[in-house]
Length: 136
Image (cartoon, rainbow, N blue to C red; front, side):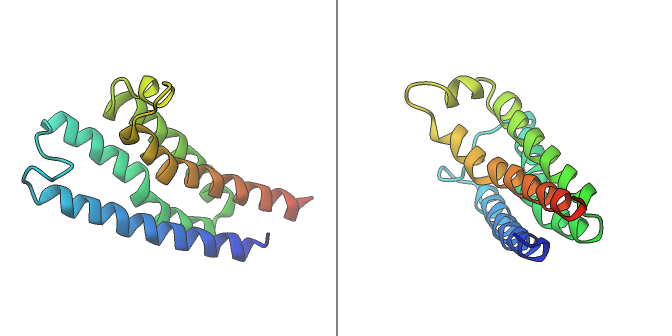
């Protein structure tokens, strides 16, 4: 796949994640019983904020970085995917690893992994592979 196609895919994914992340925040700050953030402590809200900043809200800026500095952008995307997954499974959900790897995985744990961390890892890996193909 060409570098421009990978970047285009990154911008599309980044925009979708950015809009989804901000939309989730907007719904969450509305309060009320239906809010995903309702009843969370300040520490829990901080953990969710760190996940959102390192994950879905970082993809679009990292695409701009990858356009200027492809290797740095790819490494940052991979690091963001690993960090946001780690943070989700250890800080946001203290028993997150157990929640994902049980016989009946919990939606709150695997859905953010599938929607945020996996796309970040795939994009970062595709960018690195594209760079290696260009060099080799």
